[in-house]
Length: 403
Image (cartoon, rainbow, N blue to C red; front, side, top):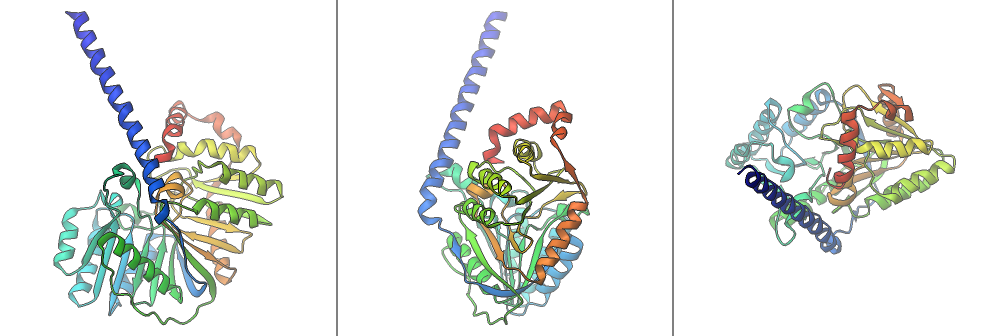
């Protein structure tokens, strides 16, 4: 009787493991095939060179009051896409403001990524629609490549108010962003570049709904900082653009990222070649991550960077969530791209390529402060890893494509 029970348990376990293996194989195959099928429609969009003015926000307490004021002052339209929305008082206040503006007659269009909004309250969206807000989800899952479309996320952040002000960067809306430990890079823009943000927002909205919001003629005056916007679909060309930036470096490269998981040989090779040319390379990523195993997933790549003479710093003051590549302390690339498999292979992203300007000094000063709040690590760091971290690192290495 006992033997029969043991055989039954083992048989059931075997069937479960077989089912799991087949499921994972199907998921992996579907994602790769789905990405291949999307390639023809995934060419990046490069917008013209514009001149705009920028402000950099790093904390919720300074970002959100200005963001809310810009929404409050809108008279004609507010277009917003965030990757995710969380719960809590901050989200309630934000949605109340959107409803208020819609009731005042302002055209309010609000978009959020389907996967990124899973923690959101569905009742919020119903109330927004009842108040007159146009609401949609980005990138709904669909067949034939269901698993690919579940993973394919619109990771962009775009906000436009009356064609006068625009925002992008790493911030979303939710309680976790309000904490003092959250540190991000969020841009506020005025000037010519706003028209390209609006075009991208309308393009994305039409893909998701079949209809475009009104596209306004933006007649903003030129600002100080030359730049251009590039939007990416399914991660195509993100790596190539980063590699080209690394190849152009003559003095130094600074990478500030919440996740350092560049599972791409060409990416790491470009950094190694830059180092051999005498380019100083600094990588900053946080000691504490906002996601499961993301810190441990970075370890093999951090170790490789250290072995090749690169400087690596761990931000220790909280959770760092900014996205920046700075070339020769003159040319910032800043936007929504993380250095991870999702941004490099799966997500819809956007990056502002900036030329040298007084605003670059603002970015440099912020990065230097952030490096002061970080600790420089060496290969000895990995000799002190806990058993738990070593196990998580091995697990993460097997699944880092999806982290």
